Length: 243
Image (spheres, rainbow, N blue to C red):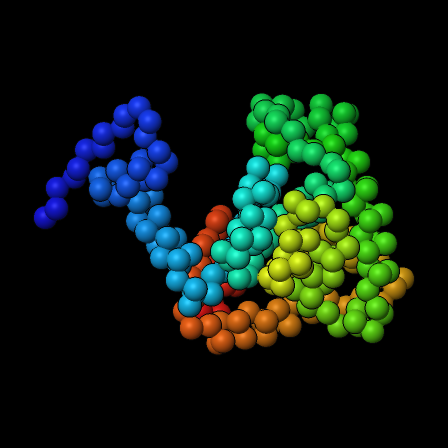
């Protein structure tokens, strides 16, 4: 058996050195972080890997928007599988709205009187979603009607990304880099509801089965596949079933 090596933190210890110490420790959370770092280093270093990043939970409103955007921009990931909600919050940030630090202890009724929405202890002003509604309608109008007759969420989010000018946007960067953002559950979000409303008067048919073609084609064309799973949920399932 290999013995547990006790970590030795000291002044000037870098993040990389700390993770190496954790890897040498080899057990519990520290050991898992070390193993994860080795795996991520391998798939990021070997360009034969096609890397999926799956996103579930409030990652974008929780402060990870720039990290995700940079992974796309620096070509570390080749495809995103995400909940619709994370892309909603990318859109509202791109429109100039912000997320705020709140508290889990606040009463929902009190926040409602102040027109504040919440995700746990993350706050966002409700007018962000009114602005999103107006912008979504304008953006959908920019997509040719023929294309809207049957469109995957991947293609729809690509078109949306092309209409975002914020260089820090996940969707804008993905569109620029040609990285597919796959979200069959997009309709389960505020943006999805606005799209449904738009489709009551205009032509819009979102077909998530087309996303299955997209993800399976990516996997079949890959030499190797790596998946980084953040938050689990259906994005994890959708990516793993294709593999």
